[in-house]
Image 1 (cartoon, rainbow, N blue to C red):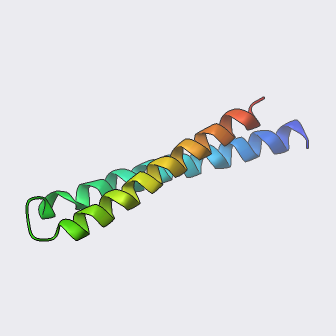
Image 2: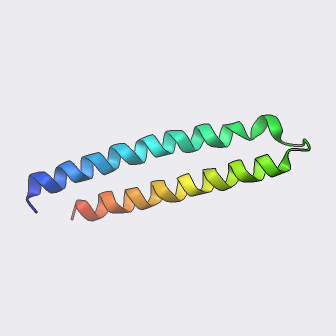
Length: 69
């Protein structure tokens, strides 16, 4: 793979990681209004989704680092 192609891949991965980080924050904030209510099932599902997004962001950041080698 060419250097320019790798750089383009790294840039796309970085942009995706930034977008996922933004979504992660938005999703986490959705739990707030439901904390302490009878909707703990909803809160748990929101937090599970938030954790998955956090994991996705970390994996994308790892790919960015690998693309930069």
